[in-house]
Length: 327
Picture (cartoon, rainbow, N blue to C red):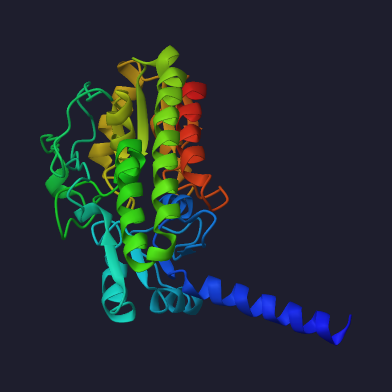
């Protein structure tokens, strides 16, 4: 290679490096939200994912590289302290100069209240129902063993279920919020961010119609989830679970809660009991023992999926296909 060629190559590399450096550094807490940010940044840049695959967002100790990504961030996009209480202090101290988009606190986010019972009422709001902006409530009575057990999240900040990313309707809203935040920090690429968000919304509308069709043959079936993480999906698609083995994922359920679930599985026509990849499969075996009820594995975080723009739609498809295969 000639000296002139080397100089041109070095200049091109310098220009390319400068262009990349102008794009905001974006740190994101969980893979499904990272997927939405990646969709908005497509063709412009790549966000950093803080929580690795398979880790629980409810409790995690960051590695140095993850802490550095947070410290270098110009923008932090995360669900909020209701999902990841360990991250609240890290955002405040490591990313003190960053713009912070907390999705659970966004005005247009639809929120549902925790369901405290082991057994759920057999109703859910369908995808066409009206939602209240921000405080859409779903209230359940406390089950008998609630005060005796510790199988619950520490509801330090609110009584709202933090698994709101499992609503494609919320995800569509967030695409616009993410694009606006990026455009504010990076006006040069604002048009690309806004166009990507619009395309992403259209893709989610198509996905929602697809999932509704996928679930149609088994709608009305009865299923139990491992822990109550899926009610946003249930609400968007009008397909409610019958109960949850565990209210939270921090501890095993109480004997009283397990007994309630087992009785429903044995005597009330449950078609499927769903485990999660990160948690004790023995509990699913315990409640289905002696029955012919089908079991499956359902994942709210996309632990086995490649991070990136394609993860979110694949996550929603996987939940739907697992349900239909199990029913």
